[in-house]
Length: 67
Image (cartoon, rainbow, N blue to C red):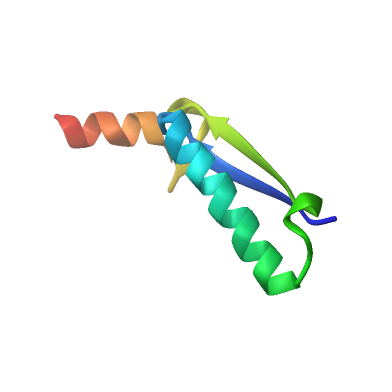
């Protein structure tokens, strides 16, 4: 049973997350030739202050871009 975890930043709409789950499930089923019913997808949403790039949080990087 494939189990997929996807880490993303908070802020996507419920509709976008539904689309992501659907399309990831479909693609994995196609590639692995397994039933979609056996595939599990978990989306982990992170607040921007908990995600770092190049030594800075995404929250801080976004603030710098906005200013």
